[in-house]
Length: 316
Image 1 (tube, helix red, strand yellow):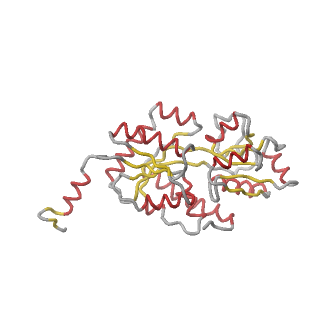
Image 2 (cartoon, helix red, strand yellow):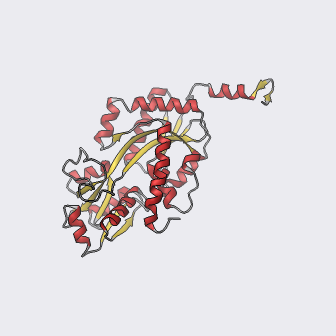
């Protein structure tokens, strides 16, 4: 035990941790541009946390290298509860397996707080593509090289396409974009044949008749797309995937702060208005404990390590 003046160090630490939290604005970093599912979830949580805790929770959208740059910056932030990370699973469990040099370690550098929501993916076809089912798609691919768009190399949409290629034994040309927004514009314009996207972001384009849904990657049919089969129903049981979103802090953040934030997030995810807002966007509410979140991250890092082997290369 060291002494600072006449006060033991452990008493100084206890005094700091025992201070009310938060006492100033908290930054919530989202590693994606505004408008997508991560942004909707992050802003919904930030607004309610600010109202419940009496301090602004300020959203900051930052992009770069598939979220790697942002994740590294958050991981190196002071572990004091004033910088939080609200990503999808991509930067946390997919990027470490598909990028050659990831500047952070998911399990070492972050303190999980809670999962917040999840969403399956939907495979959508350009309106002009003469297919309405996965079976017809597979048949057409035998005679014509088809392309599929994703929000970037190594994204969940990209890996879903790789799963379909492997399951169906077909060739599809992957066309990566910098985000779903740019990708869906070209899919609607039929500059690419197919696109995987989160159900929440695909629904508006499907409902407007701009894209045709072929199958969803969820274990069960989605309420927003009751007539669209799952991939297992379409004959491809290995093509299953659900993207998820969560809230984390830098590793070393005091346990008292993690528990306080977890309790608040858990309460917010039970609020009728929050549930209706997320479900209205095609998302499923998915809270859990910090320990359960950690176990999920560990399991998925191992899962995507196996899937990533099919890519044959890694992004720099």
